[in-house]
Image (cartoon, rainbow, N blue to C red; front, side, top):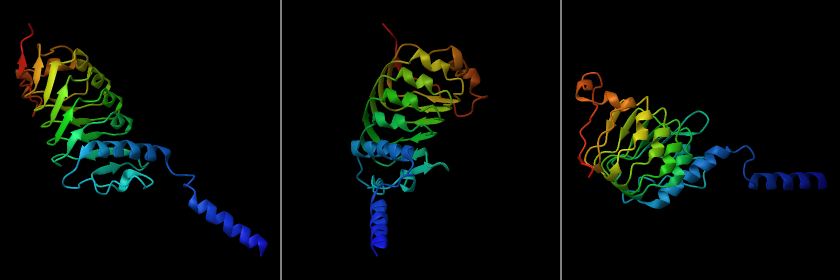
Length: 211
């Protein structure tokens, strides 16, 4: 009887401990997303399912994961969120789509978003974001869609962004940008002559002439 009692005790302890095979990356990504949740006001409770006690965030609404339970999409466009972006979002290494358009987000774009090496689409348009466009976004070698229009971004357009060879759609309009529009590198295709070849490309920029 002592053997069986000891066995039951050991099994009980093991069940209470964290699962030894729980994906560490999924936990880290859940922490990163929950940091964003804490930084925003959510009047419509669209983030109500974001439970930090779950093993991974793949069952959360508006979050998509791959077969390895790594986050690949964050779809929170037009969700009436207010608050600010957080540096922790840069830890989502396999994130491909960051869709946070048409909210009331304020503050700067974290430079850490430049670490999202898998990112294909960065849609932050129609918010109240301020500060400069981070040059670190030039590290997003897979980026095809960059839409930062209709914010309150200021400063010059970083020349480093011309390194984004995969970029197909660009919209920086309706901000407080200054200086001239870069025409080298990948930006050379964003001209009036290229409208026919790159459907939906928007190159209208509101900017102040540099003094």
